[in-house]
Image (cartoon, rainbow, N blue to C red; front, top):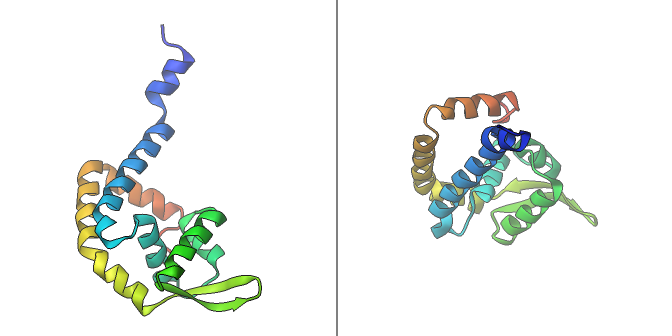
Length: 144
């Protein structure tokens, strides 16, 4: 006899997607480790490169990240000189922009990122199309 607990444990798409997300993130992070950067940081740099100078809140919207997550990662990127404030005041960074060093960092990780991308595509198989379609419906990539 199947219970509601069994149904959720056996069929819940949400938990499976979270597990897949963690696995894919780990794959990219492992590939990028030699560059001293995580996939979350690379995606923040790339989003900033695509969107252009903008308030940190805009990056949070684009990547659907919590404000504290954006702030924490931006501080790390700022410390590495991969981003810089383009507008700031006594309250902090009002707008940030990608630096030449940030663009160089993106270029330097590209071979390992591509390798991880191929591994993730193999892992996901036909699901890659669904992932891209869902992200597109959610407005990612920006300006597409």
